Length: 90
Image (tube, rainbow, N blue to C red; front, side, top):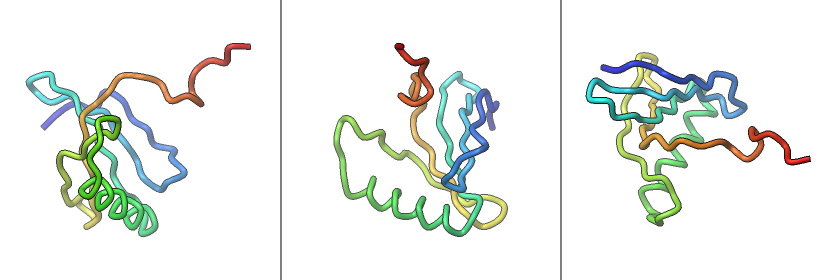
């Protein structure tokens, strides 16, 4: 299926996320709900992304059911840093 090259496990959202490289080298971002509250938030986000299209909003490409019956959303991988993770300029 693919290789996890990056994992984001300690999320306040109750989700875990992964950077996954598939066999042809393409990379994807996978966000998986691990709690009921996270599943509710992921469902709301999925509905939002289905209703709103804009060039600055990363599109959702796939959604699948995980082994525990919850879902995971798949989006294209984008390199970069979150603003709060970047080194400070001071």
